Image 1 (cartoon, rainbow over the protein chains, first blue to last red):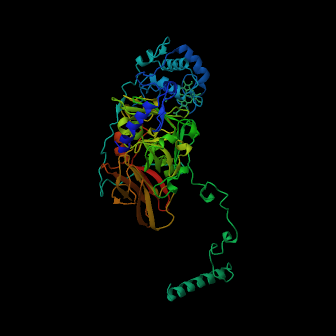
Image 2 (image 1 turned 60 degrees about the vertical axis):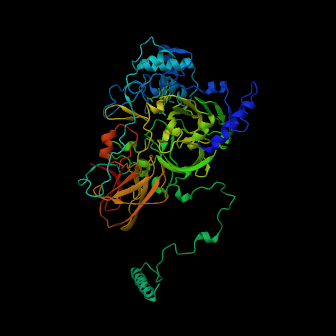
Image 3 (image 1 turned 90 degrees about the vertical axis):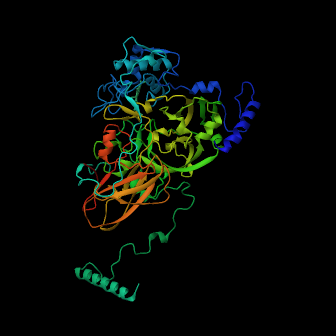
Amino acid sequence: MSSWIERTTPLSLLLLLAVFTAGEPLLAADGPGREATPEEISALDLDVRADGAGLPEGSGTVEQGEALYAEKCAACHGEFGEGVGRMPALIGGEDTLASDRPRRTVGSFWPFAPTVFDYVRRAMPFGHASTLSVDETYALAAFILNANGIVRDDFVADGRTLPAVKMPNRNGFLPDDRPGKPAVRCMSDCRSVPRIVSRARKEEGK
Amino acid sequence: MTPGMKSRITRRMLMRAAGLGALGAGAGALVRDAWAVVPETRKGLGPGVDTRPYGMPSPHEKEVVRRFIPWMNATTESSVSFTPLHALEGIITPNGLHFERHHAGAPVIAPDTHRLLIHGMVERPLVFTVEDLKRFPRHSRFHFLECAGNGALEWRGAQNNAVQFTHGMIACCQWTGVLLRDVLQYCGLKDGAKWLLCESADGAGYARSLPLKRALDDCLLVFAQNGEALRPEQGYPLRLLVPGCEGAASVKWLARIEVGDAPWMTREETARYSDLRPDGKARLFSLEMEANSVITNPCPENPLKRKGMQQLSGLAWSGRGRITAVDVSFDGGVNWRAARLEEPVLSKCLTRFRLPFEWNGEEMLLQSRAVDETGYVQPDYTTNRRNKGETGIYHNNSITTWHVAGTGEVTHVQLD
């Protein structure tokens, strides 16, 4: 890597060790930044991975989730998760992915159940994110999965059960396989006389 | 001017003046346009240097603004606004016109309260202020930034009749920051590290996984755009820039990077920003923006106003490197002519192309086609739909067609 790094790192590591004082965050006296404390990391490291890594202690039931949902979510996502206006639906869309009008929802599209916990925790309720407790978030995940018919009414969401949920579209994803050379550079007589098949409405976007 | 010419012009003008006089409209004087008087601006003073500490465009340019499509998203906070490409020259997008794409609005963050935490599979988890990061070697680089959804509304047929809306989710700036590589290596990467989670301080806790290989390539932790501090809409005080990749990978208001051994599979990289294929399977981490181009003059907003010499020009770009050629067709893709690429031609950056032509009022089907240094040739709609279908939303880099009518009016169309 860059010579700058080679020059700086060993020196700052030495200084790091030299300036350690109990209780205080470790200061890298010469280098940029300072050591993060375990408390700082655990306060911010709230993400949950697809395999459930990061799911916290706690739990929530479908029934608890239903009550919370009515109070905090239904105004936008609809009483049954059908979505109000242009707000996204949280249910439905089974067997539509290969159709002309696919509907991507938690039930029809999302590959991993822990992601429901992760997303609700980081982004919902819209405009008031980061206000739900861990148990509330588990309960809402349980309710959304249940509303999609993926888990039973007595499902209790926690760090062990969520990763074990088999999402209907679990095998619906592939690595990027877009062709690297889809077309050739032809310069003359490249195609038949073209015909216009669609035309933007004149006023659209003006 | 030769004396002969002068007398000819004078004679013609006199004849015209005489004609007007005969119609009773003139007073016998030579006719001249209204501009040919000493302008009012010469009779007074303009605003002084104390009136505009931060300069704004002329009030006569007030139509040149970002616009959005009200019905496109549920809220304006999780939505997108479009760059007015038809009104811009060169390759740089002015900061106030850079398209916006937020998932929970654009937070306003005081830089002294902002921190970047880097932790996970590193030797030393560290916290940085923006000032701390500025101590690493700085780099200024020109790169485009394009939303994966640019052109999304056109997959099923020509819909928007404006280049601002067909292609305006792209912008190009000179970004200044430090290499993510330098900062990660300063933290010390542990064996087995393969992915990063990059997380925002916005109200969506927006988070995306980034392959470490890419992070160690040319990614920047950016604090400035086009010479000044990042705009709040662009992630002030700190954003990630992943050159050449879909804009959604370039996390704004960057607050945390966790190093791990597998992708997190967040909602924003599975349920969103994955490309649904016609068979119902979706492509994951289709990060690179493939070669693309569009003619910005003429375009629906810039019709041809008169016959004769025309200055065709447009923009081309590729997330995989430099643009090596742009071809232009006047007949809907039957025959093509190479356009001139204007310097500078930079990797993962907008390139301006130009091709003057003579127009005698004939109907035309204008197209541009970009070629990049990997040999990738921008595909037409038929080819692109074969690979991507119509329902994938993202990565629409199909050749765009402008129909030019005999009147000079330009309409967005699609061909068989």
